[in-house]
Length: 465
Image (cartoon, rainbow, N blue to C red):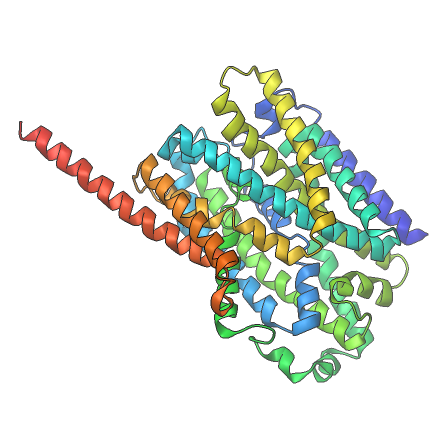
């Protein structure tokens, strides 16, 4: 009862902080937290809390439990991607001082049609990630609190919807700070106690099968490289992350926060992977997806168990709330408003809250139909990096291009990704996200080069008149 009470108390505190963060939301600008009001520490905490979701925590532990170190090593691709983004791309945010979304940047660089399409595909990407988190929270509530999985999904979604629909990104940021503290402390504590129960690291090492130390166990070398690259680019500059880059006080502080967040992810991924291996050594379950929550139930004393149960809940909610807000903001600000610019501010706020609510309901349906967290994440990625990442990175780097280059590249990325995954069935285990992104890069580069050549030729002809 004490453990359950701690979890319920944490959820109540989370909702209270989230609602408090959104009490001053009076218009659409408040909902999107625009205005460059946050410093390095807050950006670091909310950015880190946003990406550490079910796939990167309990999902990583589940894969380590089932196959060993392979998935944990591929997740380091995400860490590398974050560090590179902070170093080379985030400084370009200063070129778009009025933007609050990915579509805002794309619209300035490539025009209104590009912005509308970006909002649409950003929505699909974010909604898919929310679906993955809802599936995770259903499993977590089932194992930790004993509720039925579908009931757990509804409960988790209801918690997130309550404060994100009311307070928008301001509420999400308030909640993320608390969630970050809990998950950053909770996961190492779980690993330390579990290792003690297992007899120490040496005992765990001797209990793990030899093939678990093979990076290619459960995959192929090409599949491993493909998944590493998918992790590196799949969520790179995804809407919730870019939103946080656009609300920082200045580009320098935001760049530092991004690099720190990427560095933080390295030990976090290693810790959650080690938790999965320790759960295997202790044989706490024969069902890999429940490895982490079952370990919490099995090895922790009363009280500490409740705190770690709250940390587990925190991990899932911290990613779900950011992507849920990202879905609503992307669709409304980048698709609905550009198509209906006459909407009054009060109407825009109602649209934002309505889409936020509808997306949560849709995510529940996805979680009911597709009970594979990692699979849902990879599917969501196919609506992002093969379509948007390359033109977005080019805009941040200051590379000039046009709407036609954007549209050609988007079509090439979408077609190649879908064909590779569903017609060719992923040859050599390579995911279509990688192929689609490479095709997008190739077409965008060729189209941009052709456009710039024509622009120079026209300028030369005008000067020679």
